[in-house]
Length: 135
Length: 213
Image 1 (cartoon, each protein chain N blue to C red):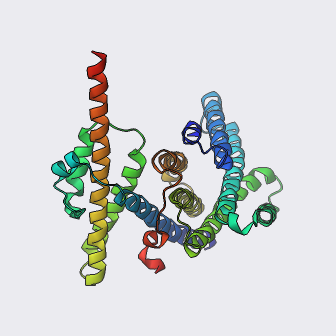
Image 2: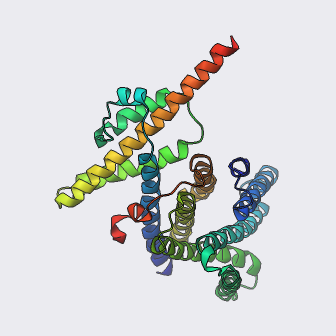
Image 3: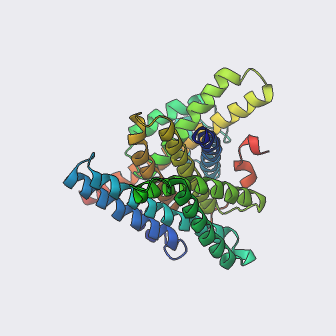
């Protein structure tokens, strides 16, 4: 009984910490401006982006050489995006306000993926420039 | 990860984190050695795993106290926090002892397992209180926010795993969860130290999940 209670309390705390952690990553990414090439590639204008683009951006991110230090944050945001998707399909129709919040959160996830893509493009260019210099 | 913290120029500011990461590294290396030498099902590995785990959780506990000191640094209450932390640690150890006092034959083994479980749960409660203070005081340092939240995820995931292991002890998933969780915390901290500059600020109210509002 006590173990079950501890489990429920811990799981509730875990969910709250996880959501807040992912939101802190997303808001930190929101503060970053996208470069022009990244805007052209992703089609993002004036910071507005649809949550549906997240998967496409993540596929593009996977095509670029890995940074090695953002994998954990990307994994967390991927899980968060999936949780939002589940909530949208089971509870999104209940309230228009909640549905709007879910849509905006998914948009933030997509923007985070675009920022990650931008960083990886910049890294790829840097690597290419270094290679050109060494030859 | 120790190198990440040092590279970010934050080793002195986050000394307890450096200490914890070093302890985790040596603990993991020791576990690997004992695992390789004696095997997974050996008594030696069992003892080593739980004793090192208890010590590592105590180190993590000091990281938490360090974060408390950082959040409350303007109030100059770090001395009181340290005293409260030692009292709480002693209280947790006493409760763990009371729980296992009847099993005289394997008292120390039961004690160390019980202590680890209790410390994880106390960690969840303390991190939750700290997160409440961060929100209430409108703490805006992104690094502090992310360090506290990742610590909260770690403590609550471990506490939930331990609780479920008590209910379903033979379920194989509980064997693999702790090592995966143990990797997640240094990875999250590594991301914070490498990607989030010390001067980065964040409106905490934005971060709080809608359930807090």
